[in-house]
Image 1 (cartoon, rainbow, N blue to C red):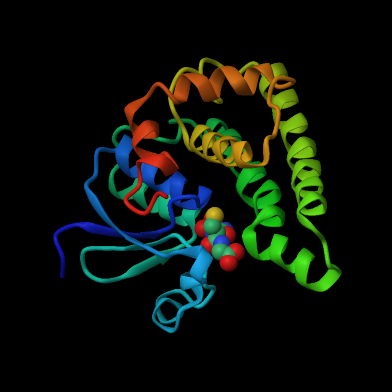
Image 2: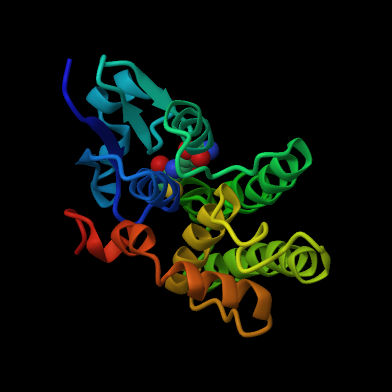
Length: 217
Ligand SMILES: N[C@@H](CCC(=O)N[C@@H](CS)C(=O)NCC(=O)O)C(=O)O
């Protein structure tokens, strides 16, 4: 038993970012145990015992139970610590927020994850430029659709859904911050840009930034 939540993370990981931002938005204190991807620490024997996928994040609860998968962690946080909410009160609003969050988390992020990019190098001999082209292709496709939805759907407000922060904003900002590493130009996506810039003024997002983490280099 420990008194605080423990987040297993890596500073550059956008899925860890999601959880850090949600924890901070809900003003929950937590510690972090970090895993250096450059040393493949996420695949160390010890961590694989905790999370057989060898992926971060994992959230260890006070009773020692582990929760895997960032969206499952966000949903757990929402159920256990509903204030401030990261999901709307109505069912159709919740469906819309989840669909936006899933667009990032289920369709955009997985095909650009480190292990996929590494596989392109190992199996097909892709060089840095080709890996970057792959990343930018899938991000462009995903962000074009995301921008179209935000720009055309009446429920978009100051944030992805109305004027309150939600899981959709958390997933969007985490991905946008990650995109910067590959020099992705977000100028063609003005609705996304406005929302991301607004979120980045919020302390919960500032504290979740890669540069603010203990393992940042
Ligand atoms: N669906 C998972 C994805 C987790 C994931 O892919 N995490 C990345 C960091 S953003 C990771 O651990 N990558 C390590 C690797 O690819 O070896 C989630 O949302 O938690």
